[in-house]
Amino acid sequence: MGENDHLKKLRQLWSLVLDSLSPPMTKALFQQHGQLLDFQENQAVVALRTRALIEKNRGRIPHLQSAFFEVTNKLVTVELILRSEYSALSPREISFQEEQAQLLSHSKTRSHAIAIHDSPLTLTTVVLSNKGEVHLTPDQETALSQLIEFTQTQEKFFRLTGFAGTGKTVLITYYIQWLVSEGINFVAATPTNKAAKNLSQIAENSGLNLSVKTVAQLLGQQPVLDEETGREVFLSQEELDWSGYGIIIIDEFSMLNRDNYSAIASEVKSSLLSKAVFVGDSAQLPPVKEREPIVSTSDEIQQSATLTQVVRYDGAIAEVAQEIRSNPQYSRILYPFTTTSDQPEGLPLRDRTIVCLSQKEWLNRAIALFESSQFKLNPDYVRFLAWRNQTVESLNKFVRSQLWGKNAPDYVPGDRLIARRPLFRASPGQKGKNKWRIALNNSEEAQVIDFGEECELLFLGQIYKYWKVMVKPDCGKEQPLSILHNESFELYTKQVKYLAQVKQWQNYYDLSRMFDDVGYAYSLTTHKAQGSTIDYVFLDVADMRGCSDQAKPATA
Image (cartoon, rainbow, N blue to C red):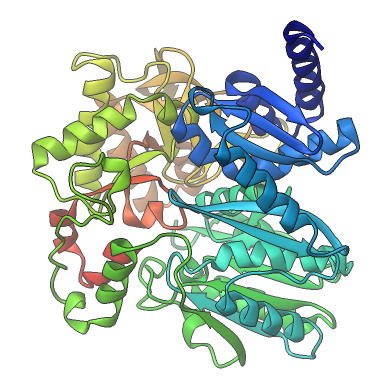
């Protein structure tokens, strides 16, 4: 076959594979950045434009394998490479093919192979059989066996704990696959939308299409105004029915408050078949105004497993996290961070684990990453983290000044926004408690798609200036936001306070929900960021002195 014919067939095959590829984000990524370089027997070689794209998207290989199987009816191993490094007969490719061929010959009962990229230097292959037997670390294998055994007993609660990076969430995705294979219905939930998004992404990287609820959604809660106190409280609007769920999985349990834990525990105990699995890290930040995570100390939870072997990252970062957690003095004083490297000096930032920089260089390196193409594809590619809201706001202003200019408008296309609390919209024809619906949940993010438009609104004889800003949420359709203008902030604050004092609750309710409380999302507090997976974290260590327990924000 001539070279031109071969290339034509490759393009035709790649087009068919892309048509079969899902989910949509994976399809869009490979349509834009991918190219099929070679296909022989059961081996496909796919090129991406940059090494960063390769490292970020190895978890999407199972989706490519499924698409190739749908088109060719063959189990195809997929290698992601840089085009510039490709050689059809290179020893690296031959070695990869032999490794995959050996892997596929080990067992006749497996359903598929999943490649999980754990670090920039290590590619771990995990095989899932039809019976749910997963080749994980010994630590994870033991915990998985305990989870499966728990599922088959009369016990109601199970607690899976472990430091960050010990593979809790990845393990849970394999437990979920076992539940699916056994026909056991389940639901997964997390306390925050950011944690829910993170769990969904990790599941997707493992080949699962997992819909994750927030705990508020699981409990059927809606914010309701307490007319005695004027406070907004979350209450269940209807009687819960979890009879269809055999397992309720709650991830990031450290953020679960006492009221929600009690509601979950009560519902599970009243259900004949339902059980709850709580997953998290007791050393991470508890809910606001609570001293410790209730799940860590509850006597109701008798079954548990603890993961101790770090698998998500290697070297110095794992050692530092362990030292901060295990040494009591770091609850009182800041850990003395120093630059560390698992590689020889002189290698680029991406090959080093912890880097301590002067403020100027710290800011400059972060801006370089914010300006990169990777950040445009993945908003969790880089973030600033700080303890105080004031520091977060200052860093957000700095990033915007570097991205858009010091005199840029308040909202420009490409800006990243995050909801500070739920954003509401009035439901036509509804009154009272049913008048409002949630348009964007707390901590959900959106991207500005058009310049903000200055507008005015009249309410109770007062004129409020606001920005009308068109955004595209990360999950959902385009919608306009109404963001209070700085010039009206003082008036708004006084009026809301006055309406609460005179107990005009309906007017208070309407005004407090009239404008959307959002902030910029380039810098986050450690509370807001908890439950996230961020590639490059720029931590303002000095700002952590404001926390009473120095260890918690440093390890969150």
